[in-house]
Image 1 (tube, one colour):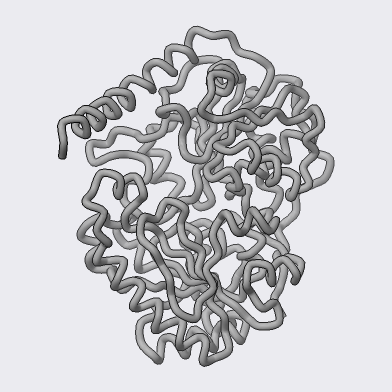
Image 2 (cartoon, rainbow, N blue to C red; image 1 turned 90 degrees about the vertical axis):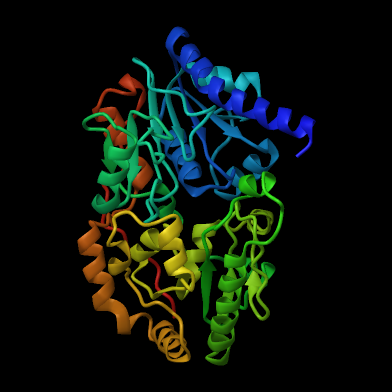
Length: 415
């Protein structure tokens, strides 16, 4: 590495360490104003979008959405049919205006941490929506037990993982909001024309493969740039599965993780990126709501998908390597998967049969796992989060009562 590269890396590390303390000082010393800030990654992230929807309907103060691309964010809100007239101001995330609104907002909600993840301060409320509660080790804290993200409240979809994450991020007593993830309210059918626009035949069954990343784009920026051997193994296994499901008449849609540094180009599969979904006005969880089944690995997406009570298969050819490197928390997490590992031709045939039978073969297992992990299945999640925060005095009189009663979620069925 050349001298200027070393200096660049060093400068970035210094900025990363100093930034949270500067932002914390601003949070501590600036006045609190009657508005709420929301930030999600990517700009189409369902948790943040649904929180904006609920705030527009019920919150009497200002609503600021911080976006990496305000143009994209405006389209996303428009496609979500969220009223933007005088109710939502969209600000460029990397701007002084956005930073000012964040440090002065009475409540801030975010999915990945914001501005270096500053520590909590009195009077202002930080709500960690997060973006799932999967089975990987160190979701909320490093190997020394130091929290990655600080917040007054943490949203979780299961008692199983919620308690672990709350402990890792040193959440205050009463800070765990066991409500589920707001994005599950986006589960639903999509216009057949929209599915066709992203390459899916709506007349045929399909499953979505959502692999987590083994190496992020940030890690790639500081590496040699070579492909990860683990990705080759995963792709080779995926190719076998795609071929087997195709023989059963089932389409496979590959949805890459936005932070994945490795490519997953599988012959015969349909690759759909975040950009393609946004361009065609389709939300990821709408797509999942149309899918007849899910293929994944160590990603947390299966926990949300479990509320649909449909087949879930696990493509984990690098299970032993991943366990030795990253690891799982809780340690017995792989013993509580709601579906089979898809490895052999027999596994693929059984998974195909389960998909075509609407999950009848694995229904009992899904029910058992749901009970074990304490899965939240209720709808109106964003509304419930606002109600919990209001009950704790975080909004004052600016939150109007909920217009309708919460009901047990009824998910769309697939023919």
